[in-house]
View 1 (cartoon, rainbow, N blue to C red):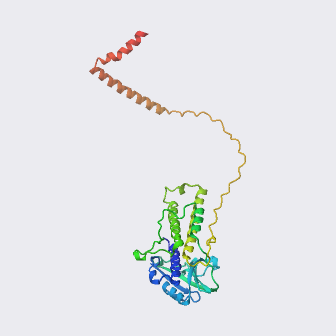
View 2: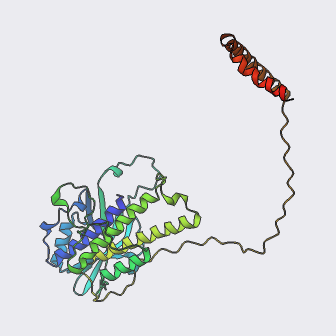
View 3: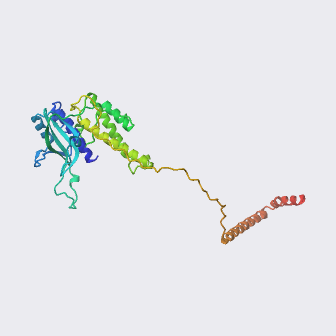
Length: 356
């Protein structure tokens, strides 16, 4: 599991369970030991001065609750007009903190070291350390931020039509989706997000897409020589890769919508995409075909047999003489031991002469 994938899942869990906490439906003690947070630190900083406001998501949520926050939501940054941030490798997601009359925006990513300009050729010890997710406070905006509502049956039908595959699939269990985590304890295994009632379908939809993603990765693995993908022509391989890109975009869509369950401001499923689908692959231009030219075949002359070498003929004659001599000597020995066989050999010759 890649670190980017783990980071996105932590964002989904934080927004989903954090909203349940701010709505007073779950206590921090019920979920703060969620396995998805194991091996990672979540820091919350102010953009101005880079001040560390909180070094634990429990403290951050407690301060938000005290300030009157009502829920959280997860959004693509492009939809909120947030540009790329300097000195930060960010995920492209923004967490919105909702208040009754305003909302705050927090960018999610990883702070980039000021000295890390690539000039120093040193081994990286950070690659073996725990992850650090940085939530950077951007600004506060008035009014209410709209959060779309999701009808999971309609969304599942749209995904199934686009991917030409059943969603949800019978290949996944009818159970809450639990992410693979670094924690092995049973008490740390929890659903990735909170969903009840009709929203519970989101678990099977996400599980189906993740299952298909794993199968796609196996089919396109260069080491999988039995996969039909490696025997496709250029157009077939491009179509399959585009299918995989559409699958990834639907997973990103489902994760955002799953994080925002219970935080929607709308009541109807509008059907608009939160993520733009990938562009279709470019078609390879085919040159126009004109009238076929007459086929001009030159007369085919009969092939001449290869000339035999003189040494080949001499060796063959010597072998034949040797074999014949061996047969004559062997037959003479048989006649000496069994004289009556000579009658059988000579009788056909005598009859042939008599007929003449």
